[in-house]
Length: 207
Image (cartoon, rainbow, N blue to C red; front, side):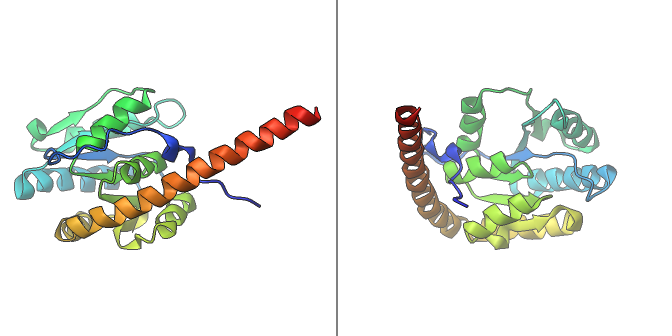
Protein backbone atom coordinates (compact mmCIF):
# COMPACT_ATOMS: atom_id res chain seq x y z
CA UNK A 1 0.00 0.00 0.00
CA UNK A 2 1.06 3.59 -0.64
CA UNK A 3 0.51 5.89 2.36
CA UNK A 4 -0.09 9.52 1.42
CA UNK A 5 0.88 12.50 3.54
CA UNK A 6 -2.09 14.26 5.13
CA UNK A 7 -3.41 16.89 2.69
CA UNK A 8 -3.59 19.36 5.59
CA UNK A 9 0.09 20.03 4.94
CA UNK A 10 -0.81 21.57 1.58
CA UNK A 11 -2.74 24.31 3.36
CA UNK A 12 -1.39 27.85 3.45
CA UNK A 13 -0.55 29.39 6.83
CA UNK A 14 0.56 32.89 7.75
CA UNK A 15 3.71 31.66 9.55
CA UNK A 16 3.50 34.34 12.22
CA UNK A 17 6.87 35.51 13.50
CA UNK A 18 5.69 37.63 16.45
CA UNK A 19 5.83 36.40 20.04
CA UNK A 20 2.92 33.98 20.60
CA UNK A 21 -0.01 35.17 22.67
CA UNK A 22 -0.37 33.82 26.18
CA UNK A 23 -3.02 31.19 25.66
CA UNK A 24 -3.19 27.44 25.13
CA UNK A 25 -5.58 25.85 22.64
CA UNK A 26 -7.52 22.81 23.87
CA UNK A 27 -9.10 20.17 21.65
CA UNK A 28 -11.06 17.39 23.39
CA UNK A 29 -13.34 14.61 22.23
CA UNK A 30 -15.26 11.78 23.90
CA UNK A 31 -13.40 8.51 24.45
CA UNK A 32 -14.42 5.16 25.90
CA UNK A 33 -10.92 4.79 27.34
CA UNK A 34 -11.56 7.24 30.17
CA UNK A 35 -14.58 8.13 32.29
CA UNK A 36 -15.87 11.56 31.19
CA UNK A 37 -16.03 12.96 34.73
CA UNK A 38 -12.38 12.02 35.30
CA UNK A 39 -11.30 13.81 32.14
CA UNK A 40 -13.43 16.88 32.94
CA UNK A 41 -12.02 17.21 36.45
CA UNK A 42 -8.36 16.76 35.50
CA UNK A 43 -8.58 19.13 32.52
CA UNK A 44 -10.34 21.79 34.60
CA UNK A 45 -7.67 21.59 37.32
CA UNK A 46 -4.98 21.75 34.65
CA UNK A 47 -6.55 24.85 33.06
CA UNK A 48 -6.58 26.56 36.47
CA UNK A 49 -2.92 25.58 36.97
CA UNK A 50 -1.92 27.04 33.59
CA UNK A 51 -3.46 30.36 34.62
CA UNK A 52 -2.21 30.46 38.22
CA UNK A 53 1.28 29.07 37.58
CA UNK A 54 2.12 30.48 34.13
CA UNK A 55 -0.44 33.18 33.38
CA UNK A 56 -1.65 31.21 30.34
CA UNK A 57 -5.29 31.46 29.36
CA UNK A 58 -7.10 28.58 27.64
CA UNK A 59 -9.10 28.61 24.41
CA UNK A 60 -11.33 25.56 23.96
CA UNK A 61 -12.12 24.70 20.33
CA UNK A 62 -14.68 22.10 19.22
CA UNK A 63 -13.62 20.28 16.05
CA UNK A 64 -16.85 18.31 15.71
CA UNK A 65 -20.40 18.70 17.03
CA UNK A 66 -22.39 16.15 15.04
CA UNK A 67 -21.54 12.51 15.81
CA UNK A 68 -19.19 13.30 18.72
CA UNK A 69 -20.15 16.55 20.41
CA UNK A 70 -16.89 18.24 21.37
CA UNK A 71 -18.69 21.44 22.37
CA UNK A 72 -20.77 19.64 24.99
CA UNK A 73 -17.61 18.13 26.47
CA UNK A 74 -15.71 21.43 26.49
CA UNK A 75 -18.59 23.18 28.26
CA UNK A 76 -18.57 20.46 30.93
CA UNK A 77 -14.89 21.19 31.52
CA UNK A 78 -15.56 24.94 31.61
CA UNK A 79 -18.19 24.45 34.32
CA UNK A 80 -15.54 22.93 36.62
CA UNK A 81 -12.91 25.61 36.05
CA UNK A 82 -12.45 27.99 38.99
CA UNK A 83 -10.83 30.87 37.09
CA UNK A 84 -13.43 31.29 34.37
CA UNK A 85 -11.96 34.66 33.37
CA UNK A 86 -9.02 32.72 31.93
CA UNK A 87 -11.10 30.49 29.63
CA UNK A 88 -12.89 30.96 26.31
CA UNK A 89 -15.07 28.30 24.70
CA UNK A 90 -15.32 29.01 20.97
CA UNK A 91 -18.35 28.15 18.87
CA UNK A 92 -17.95 25.39 16.30
CA UNK A 93 -16.90 26.47 12.83
CA UNK A 94 -16.21 24.43 9.71
CA UNK A 95 -13.89 27.19 8.45
CA UNK A 96 -10.50 25.57 8.99
CA UNK A 97 -8.73 28.89 8.31
CA UNK A 98 -10.25 30.40 11.46
CA UNK A 99 -9.15 27.42 13.52
CA UNK A 100 -5.62 27.50 12.11
CA UNK A 101 -5.42 31.24 12.79
CA UNK A 102 -6.26 30.71 16.48
CA UNK A 103 -3.63 27.96 16.74
CA UNK A 104 -1.01 30.06 14.90
CA UNK A 105 -1.27 32.78 17.52
CA UNK A 106 -1.26 30.45 20.54
CA UNK A 107 1.56 29.48 22.87
CA UNK A 108 0.85 25.74 22.61
CA UNK A 109 -1.83 23.12 21.92
CA UNK A 110 -3.24 20.37 24.11
CA UNK A 111 -5.08 18.12 21.70
CA UNK A 112 -7.04 14.91 21.36
CA UNK A 113 -8.34 15.52 17.85
CA UNK A 114 -5.86 14.45 15.18
CA UNK A 115 -6.38 17.64 13.20
CA UNK A 116 -5.59 19.79 16.21
CA UNK A 117 -2.18 18.08 16.22
CA UNK A 118 -1.79 18.29 12.44
CA UNK A 119 -2.51 22.02 12.64
CA UNK A 120 -0.02 22.33 15.51
CA UNK A 121 2.74 20.91 13.34
CA UNK A 122 1.55 22.89 10.32
CA UNK A 123 1.88 26.14 12.32
CA UNK A 124 5.03 24.90 14.13
CA UNK A 125 3.33 25.17 17.49
CA UNK A 126 4.46 22.95 20.44
CA UNK A 127 1.81 20.50 21.57
CA UNK A 128 0.84 17.90 24.14
CA UNK A 129 -0.96 15.03 22.39
CA UNK A 130 -3.65 13.18 24.37
CA UNK A 131 -4.00 9.89 22.57
CA UNK A 132 -7.27 7.99 22.37
CA UNK A 133 -6.45 6.10 19.15
CA UNK A 134 -3.67 4.34 17.23
CA UNK A 135 -3.85 7.04 14.55
CA UNK A 136 -2.66 9.60 17.13
CA UNK A 137 0.13 7.28 18.30
CA UNK A 138 1.25 6.63 14.73
CA UNK A 139 1.35 10.30 13.78
CA UNK A 140 3.39 11.25 16.85
CA UNK A 141 5.74 8.31 16.27
CA UNK A 142 6.18 9.34 12.62
CA UNK A 143 7.43 12.77 13.68
CA UNK A 144 9.46 11.25 16.54
CA UNK A 145 7.89 13.34 19.30
CA UNK A 146 6.72 10.63 21.68
CA UNK A 147 7.91 12.62 24.70
CA UNK A 148 4.86 14.84 24.14
CA UNK A 149 2.41 11.92 23.88
CA UNK A 150 0.12 11.02 26.78
CA UNK A 151 -2.40 8.13 26.54
CA UNK A 152 -5.78 9.52 27.55
CA UNK A 153 -6.41 6.63 29.95
CA UNK A 154 -3.33 7.69 31.95
CA UNK A 155 -4.39 11.29 32.34
CA UNK A 156 -4.08 12.84 35.77
CA UNK A 157 -3.74 16.43 36.91
CA UNK A 158 -0.18 15.77 38.08
CA UNK A 159 0.88 14.13 34.82
CA UNK A 160 -0.65 16.88 32.68
CA UNK A 161 1.29 19.48 34.66
CA UNK A 162 4.54 17.50 34.46
CA UNK A 163 4.30 16.94 30.71
CA UNK A 164 3.37 20.54 30.01
CA UNK A 165 6.21 21.79 32.18
CA UNK A 166 8.53 19.55 30.14
CA UNK A 167 7.16 21.19 26.99
CA UNK A 168 7.86 24.64 28.41
CA UNK A 169 11.37 23.68 29.50
CA UNK A 170 12.17 22.53 25.94
CA UNK A 171 10.06 25.09 24.08
CA UNK A 172 12.77 26.51 21.78
CA UNK A 173 14.18 23.10 20.86
CA UNK A 174 10.68 21.81 20.17
CA UNK A 175 9.99 24.80 17.90
CA UNK A 176 13.09 23.97 15.84
CA UNK A 177 12.08 20.30 15.59
CA UNK A 178 8.57 21.25 14.45
CA UNK A 179 9.98 23.59 11.80
CA UNK A 180 12.00 20.70 10.37
CA UNK A 181 9.07 18.26 10.43
CA UNK A 182 6.68 20.82 8.95
CA UNK A 183 9.05 21.43 6.03
CA UNK A 184 9.40 17.69 5.33
CA UNK A 185 5.67 16.99 5.64
CA UNK A 186 4.79 19.95 3.41
CA UNK A 187 7.21 18.77 0.74
CA UNK A 188 5.87 15.23 1.00
CA UNK A 189 2.24 16.36 0.82
CA UNK A 190 2.85 18.57 -2.22
CA UNK A 191 4.69 15.71 -3.91
CA UNK A 192 1.74 13.40 -3.31
CA UNK A 193 -0.64 16.10 -4.57
CA UNK A 194 1.21 16.13 -7.89
CA UNK A 195 1.23 12.33 -7.97
CA UNK A 196 -2.55 12.22 -7.51
CA UNK A 197 -3.01 14.74 -10.31
CA UNK A 198 -0.92 12.55 -12.64
CA UNK A 199 -2.91 9.43 -11.66
CA UNK A 200 -6.24 11.20 -12.26
CA UNK A 201 -5.01 12.53 -15.60
CA UNK A 202 -3.94 9.04 -16.73
CA UNK A 203 -7.33 7.64 -15.67
CA UNK A 204 -9.10 10.32 -17.71
CA UNK A 205 -6.99 9.49 -20.77
CA UNK A 206 -7.68 5.77 -20.46
CA UNK A 207 -11.43 6.21 -19.91
